[in-house]
Image 1 (cartoon, rainbow, N blue to C red):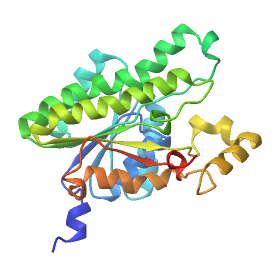
Image 2 (image 1 turned 90 degrees about the horizontal axis):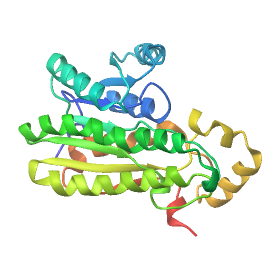
Image 3 (image 1 turned 120 degrees about the horizontal axis):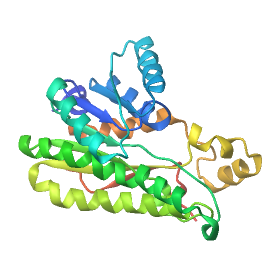
Length: 257
């Protein structure tokens, strides 16, 4: 019988999590570290990265900081190459970097559409490409793309965000199909509505919160630490025959009408 600590354990693995200095990305990093992985905290603001490293250190977790902008392809190629040369191969990749902007579709600013797509979608393409080359050479690796309930559901005022997360879902399935023969698994996590800085305006909106509680079978907001179990599962050998799938951690929202 397989020991559960071995099945879910991540000892000896290195995980890179984009956009992980706070919010969902930070929660993912903390969870993977608790499973035994060496985690690389990424962000484009050095102060935020250092604050995240300090917070982890207070919990007894020593992590690595990597400050660069994942929406700039040239920076990604350089920094991923440097990290792997200095720290060894990346075994687990979490494409988490994301942003939101709310506006009516007819008036949505073109520059903001471009920025949102670069952050939510292009960054995953940019980071995955160099990481995958190394994984292919080793015939192993786990990639986790952070999708959303908006990978399945539409909502007014966030049409570009919905488009980006729908694309992340299909990027996951396409990569899983192409990379499976190389021993690389690619899955996604689709968070529902969680208390994060990204959603602070909605959290403070009493009318929206009432709607959310009524729309969600578990009748509450999610807490970011509740995403850790899915991250450990997908990163570990516990999901060794699983690829091309999206796990929705949403309190039941996508399963109800």
